[in-house]
Image 1 (cartoon, one colour):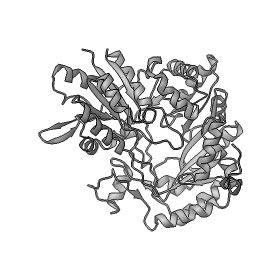
Image 2 (cartoon, one colour):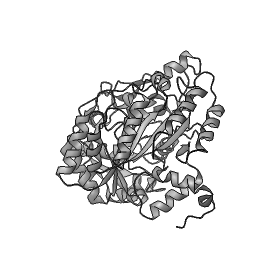
Image 3 (cartoon, helix red, strand yellow):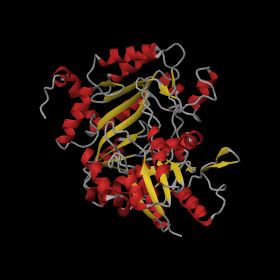
Image 4 (cartoon, one colour):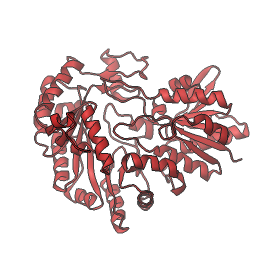
Length: 470
């Protein structure tokens, strides 16, 4: 029996840019294929309109997607799940229909967030099949306890079923990109996003991607990916970001996607997150020919001892080689560092800084402290070292520092590094950088703006004084 389902994005993060809720597009496609009617509500684009939407649409079910738990920055520690709690309370005032919570952030803390939101049900992990099954069983008055990934109350306790990792058959289609909502995100940054695969087989000690998407890489059909890319271009996207945890999970995957882009003559710039290992000059050249303009590397450290302790399974030689390949193809490169994690010392931080000076033209974005999430190897290390209790409520951010280090000491070293070369950005961007972002977006510049950071650093006093004309 078809139902009316209202899908809500609870994301309120807009730094550096607001991001289109791609997960809702995937859910929308699955619900439509199951015969349901759908509508969307996004507080970023439609602030203050929730009650009007509930009144006019009268949903049978409401789904709330929680994308992020917090900003992972130790000096701000801004939590982002409160919007879902507030939305759920407002929905309860207007309707008695079941509320279902899901999303990547929810999947990390399903019991706590079901309790906090007061929602009726939740879906852990990938939500397409689980949400459709849950609605079907609720419509029929059947038991929901056997649905993979379902979160529900039973005899006064919250039960979390293990999620099921399924083949990745498709994604959003043309009807799953609402026009008015898409226009909001395009106006903000000129950018839309796309996913080519899910899953991550790598062992990075802090990472939650394997917990949310599974450890097996599951790629989409390359022709379907390029069809989506063409559609995003028709919608007005001048830049597309591939949101895969790691785009270069295999050379074959990258090659198939890029060759399909070239074969079909799609001309749009794009960026992605790359593992700084397993790349070749041929592969980087192919990506650049296919439109790659920015590569973001999850390097985490430029010191081999720290890389080993963080279970990165790569070395600084790999990082240097990947960065050089990008530079030679005029692809902008940014390396993300998490400083203070396992194996870190004052000496390894200095080694990372010294090695960073070999990365010609690359931007370095460094943060102090490694956010601890349940279910990760870092969590087990932190418990074993007595830094946190196993029963700790990690919805409130907790950060790991290697024994002998403190936040103040690590941050002081990073700030010292940032005063020397013009390509280090420490923590959250300064107000001057945010002002520059707004002006560049106003001028029509698209894509990641960290590539402008070196210029900002060189012109820092001028920028802070308002010397860059709009």
